[in-house]
Image 1 (spheres, rainbow, N blue to C red):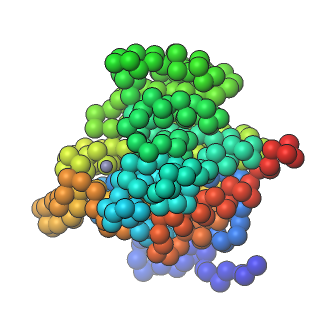
Image 2 (tube, rainbow, N blue to C red; image 1 turned 90 degrees about the vertical axis):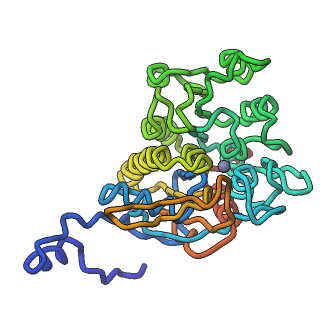
Image 3 (cartoon, rainbow, N blue to C red; image 1 turned 180 degrees about the vertical axis):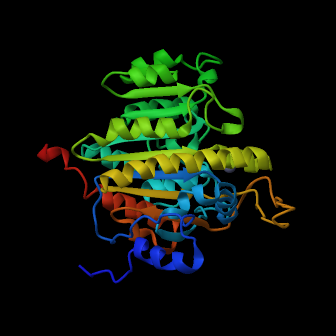
Length: 369
Ligand SMILES: [Zn+2]
């Protein structure tokens, strides 16, 4: 292994203190890591609709508290779908989940309709603990792309059946108000049909016993986190539950509010969701740092709103160029074992293929268990 010649931060700051009396505000950067390391667990954090300007705004809002900026590996991801330069969340998440570009609206299928195993399904098959956690409503595209295979992302009942048959250990989202209305099953019905324990409050989540969990909370405004439970608290609970599996784990954490606020060109709502996403990243990174064997990735799936950072510090004049998605590339940040594989400017399929190759080296095949 190559020896680092870097001067330890403490020594450097000690010397600089003589002249600058500073350094205390400089945020920590997580240690860099190699390409070929295999993690014990993977946490993929998706800020839906987050392009470079969204991450820039989050950094301005959070200042020294900005946690995403401490992840040492940074790259760019081209987001186009198979049928368009401007993708949707279904095709975008399918690329991350399966390594295939597909048509807008498709989940877990390639453009000809052929189903491909997702990162979560491969992880399940190798005995890993798995979880899909989001502020989006139950069955929404990003988590669904990891556990469903349909040509219509709006087919919520079919998607629900497939997600509960996937074997994923933790399914958590919002959208509780949908259940039991308009021909939709109740949460209890859906959970018991799939062999899951239903959960709909923070208290129930904290006391839930063993077995697969289907947690659905009341929706937050514009897909922000549920008033019942902050995203960082949900992510923390999922990490505790999944990381104990000796075979390892895969966890998706999605913030949907960043996309919905951008569709609405609503800066105040966007700022609320950017803060809650970054707080969730902070909780995950605190957990990952203590263990040292968890790969954490933070990425957008596409840009939404054509957000522009304008004006001055005293007079910010941020503005929007669109109320839909754009074709701009999105940043990706990574820390932990295997993180260096996400450096560079790549297609979104490369993210999916890298995740698949990692989970195929984690856990063990069913035949040897
Ligand atoms: Zn969107």
